[in-house]
Length: 213
Image (cartoon, rainbow, N blue to C red; front, side, top):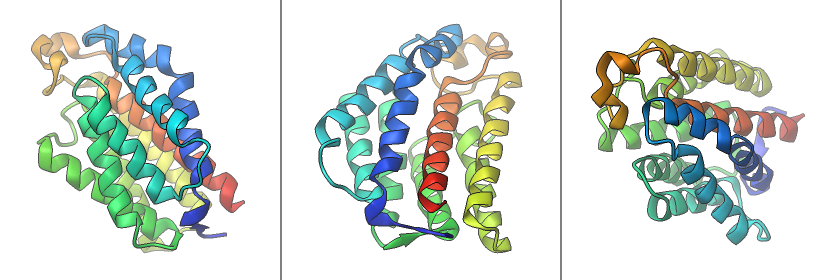
């Protein structure tokens, strides 16, 4: 299939939750190298709160994104809560318009999330933030939509773009957040936000691929 029903999107959110829970310690380790080490803990708290509150309820893909984003925005510490909250809630706002979601629709949703983020944080590709993961992922989906690439293949390409973007942050100097104070000493380490964004996008893509198989 080249799309899935928005109303059937609950498993995608639960897969995203599990991916963050499984990588809590890893994200803490990555963040601890040039940050304060709490990224994994904070992300796990928010995603687990979402699972606890909504795991037993029915919700669509776009509804799930909004509820998760709202929790992250308002209930977890650090700068990443508002950042992820904005991305997910802005993606949800666009997603509410769709009964079915394919390559074009997912590109529009994640593109809206990226645009919303860049309205509150001036980060661009190359600044060693999650933008280095999210922006190429969105670009990949948009290109696939233009080319008429089948959804499953487009999702694989998106995962590859996200991973390449994540890996690119290792050679960058941080320009935002606590790690920006380190200057050149921030080089040689992955950005924690770029890493968690890749985990989330990969889990999302894998779950969608299962839905449309």
